[in-house]
Image (tube, rainbow, N blue to C red; front, side):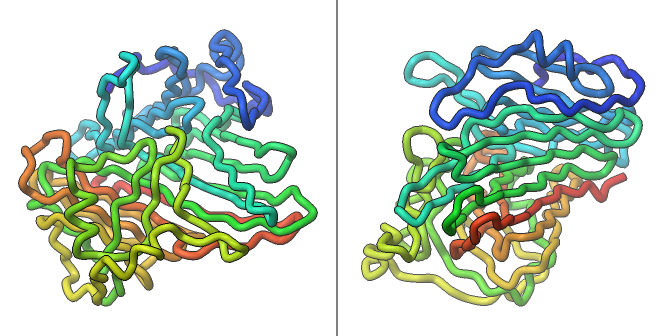
Length: 364
């Protein structure tokens, strides 16, 4: 989706201004005049789309990325390629909602959930722009933030565009005087010609177990795939809650339990070890890989393209393939891959957790 033209280039500037005050319960209207006045230029521009704002980062070599506020959803990443032009890496769909509004799914989305010692869960869904730095000749970084109610926790996300890389780096700070439990994942919908021409390279020897698809606000899941996959696989389920991608089925050990655990006796669990260095994505499947390497590569022979997916701070990798029965280059021509936490991370009072994921373009 091309929302607006590439912005004019300017000298490097750096700001330390907050575009909107973080709000846990109320989405504050985006002040477009403020964003344009304070942050546009030096490779960054803004476009109003309904009640949302699209932020574009564009480098001099043609590479660009787009994300939306306040959701923080990255809708586009077009790196400069070996053939002299850019190529879209992400798979994003736009459909009409029940009230006629545009529903955007896919791309790169982040889903975190923290739970305090009283069992009160909260997820950041209202991200605000806090800082823009860099320049269009080297790299551009956009810093986002979201604060929990009663100053329970602070979430930060820095999205950085470089000539051969799109990075998302996360920081979670426990502001309470008691511990917090943290769970989360990053979902990358990578566009492909068809899963039949797509391979995951580097997962050989990694253990995996089958699971249901992760169903968040931005997930693209083929019809009936949850029913089909869950009939032959086990593991945790992540369910949509209140249309904001909260992980209602993730629970902590403190008096709360995973809803999916109660269903384990009815689900045949699928476990194994990846035997192929070139894991073919042609079959419909949904897995969590444990002991996976910190970086591996997705190759699409149909588009003659590859993307290296790297991570830090996350132990496991989620992989979903819709299978090859769908149309080439259609709505379900994608692979969903992302780093996940299988078990909660405990944050002590004042503690900090850091994690990151990287989409590296090896095609220069």
